[in-house]
Length: 348
Image (cartoon, rainbow, N blue to C red; front, side):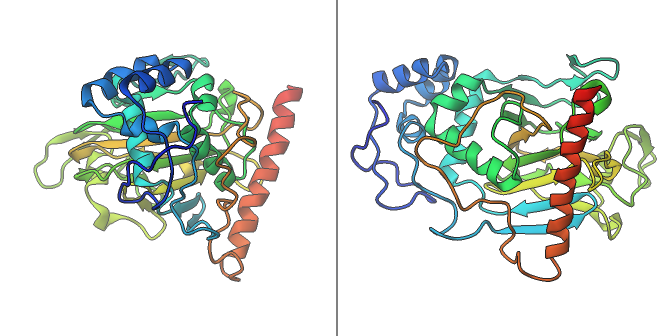
């Protein structure tokens, strides 16, 4: 009832004119979060003394980052690994809401241990903060449903085949050393990942696929200028002039998303999908990350309800271009291979 149409509020930079939403009182905003199981998010909104974002998050979603009827502005920038960039994937308001929604609930990030399927904290490998949304939140908050539908349509992966949305913050010097997102041997099999950037970092924070470079490993390196020993990919991240032609470097930009596949067309794990969350040099970096699964995982469906976004179907704007069509076909073949791996894992 709180999300019903009301008067016009919150015309942000990327909000479409004429979007009607109910302007929440403080009491209504808090009650909406409690009913969605997100009461722990309230302190940040209360501290800001502004319910505009909560009003936006619980309103009927009708705004899109591209003109009505437009195709997703996807650009295939690499085939191996298969990487697609979508600029303006999220609106400014969506980015602001996601950051605010997680702000007071961030905790140190963890990594999967090599011996089992448990997570542990490892600051040498990864030292950012993160928050995992719950299935209840993903289903109950209209803007989350709206964004997650878009993520699944862009990747062409069924709604239920994903882990919870993870929202992360990288403060200055925070990073994630080189890793592959999928680890079938330890039952963490992920065919693809979508990362959406929620702000513009002041410096650093690139997502780097270091194909063709040999100086990006999680070991100690000598700075050629000073002789100082530096751990991990920091020097690699800071030297784009040394990138090979096949190196893929994505600069964070608010609203931009990058989709990449961890398995090749034959379903085999693609080591070239190894990627680095480069250290933030200045300011901070916020992301929303969706790890997709080969088979049903959280089993949250977004195919019903208001705000369905039919335009983000994963097809680049120049889909019909002869140069791009084979790349799209390779991506589709990779998903077919993923299905075969899923069946094999189930049989095992």
